[in-house]
Image (cartoon, rainbow, N blue to C red; front, top):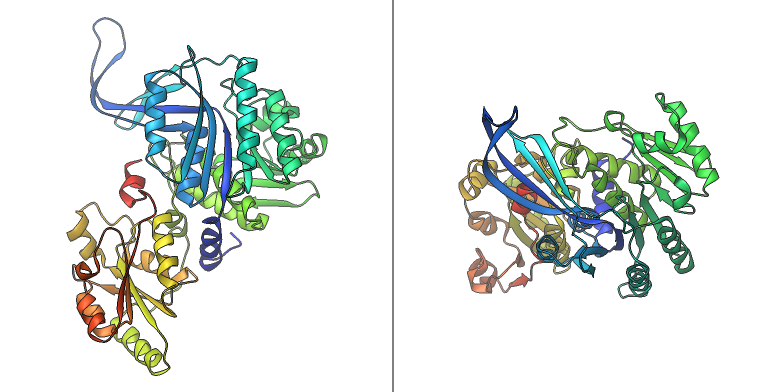
Length: 482
C-alpha cells in the first residue's frame, strides 16, 4: 500500500466527475437461499427448503452498478431478450439514476440468467439460462451504432469498459471496432477478457485478466510472480496493450506496463466469503481511476482495497467508497465538542462563515459525498456531526452501524472539503448545534427548512437553512442488502 487515507479520499472525490461507458454481456443474477436437512428419496441429492429469493444485475450490469456506487455516471450497452428476466434486469438497473441502460432487445434470445442455489450461504447448484451464440449482423450493427452515439454524448465519456463474459455480445471483430472507436475519440479503454486469444483485445489500454485467464492466454503454468510479470509484459508488447493488471486472488494483483514498470499490490481481504462479481469490482475501480488520470500506483491501491471488500461479501458484490476507506488506518482525530466549540469561536471572530450538517454516514456512498460537497459550497468551514455507535443503534437497529464511530469519523475527516467532525450521542444534533452556533445548516432530502433540527438556533442569529436534493436512491441499506 503506497497511498494514505487522505490521498485515496481525494481520488474518490475526483471519481465523482467521471462518465464511463460499459459495453458487454449483461445478465441477471438470482440467489435462492434456504437450508438443507434432508436427502431426496428420489435421488441422492439434498432437498433445499427455500427461505428467500433475491436478484440483482450481473456481468456487465454489475460492472455498471459498481461504477455507480463508486460515484461515476455510467452508460451501459448490452443485449437482453424479450422475456421476464430482461424486464427484471431493466427494472433493477432503473433503480439507480446514475446508470443509463441502453439495451438492445433480441427477440427469441434469452436474457442471460444465472440462478444460484445456496444452503447456509454455501452454493450447492448453479443453473444458467443463456444463448452464447454470436449476435446476428443486424444486432451487431445496432450496438456499434449505439456506441458511436454514446461516445459523442454529453457529458463526455471519460473511459470505456469492454466487459467480456463470452455470452455472444462481444466477438473479436466487435471488440476491435470498439477499440478503434476509442482511439479515434482519444478515450481510454479497459477490457476484462474472457477469450484465451488476447489478440481480440489488441490495442486496449488496460487488460484485467485473472490468473486462470492469463495462464490460458500464455499456455504457461505461471506460479511465481516473476514469471507472471514476464509473461504479462510479453503479452503487452505482442498485442500493443498499455498494461495488463493481473488479479491473483490471495496474492493481490500485479500491474505490468508497456514501459516495463511493474506494481504489485498485496491482497487486503480479511475473509473470503464469495468471489461472485469481484472481478467486476476491480475493472470498475480501475476504469474509474483511468477516467480521471489517477496515477497507476494509486489506481492499483484502490482496486486492491475494493476487491478486498468485494470478496468478503455474499452474492454479486458492489462496493462503496466508505467501505474502501474504512479499511485504511487513520490517525486519531479530535471529535469532542469543546474542541470544535472553541474552533468555531475563533472562526467567528475572524468573520469565517461556518456550516454544519449531520448524519450516521455508515458506509460512505456517492450520495453522501455529493451532499457534503454541496454543503461545503455554502460555507467557508464545514463541521459534520456524526451519530455515535449507540445513537446509530437506537435509530437503525442492533445490526448497525457496520462501521464503528472512529472509522466513520476518520473517513469523513479525510475528505478535503470537511474541516471538522464532532460526534454526538443523542438522537438529534440539537445540543451540538446549540454549542457550535453555525451560520448555516445544510441537510439533504425532502426536509422543509422549518423541520431541520437546530433551524431555530441558526435563524435566531441571522443564519440560514439550506436543503440539498438527494442524489438518486443511494443508501447504506442498499449496499448492505446486496
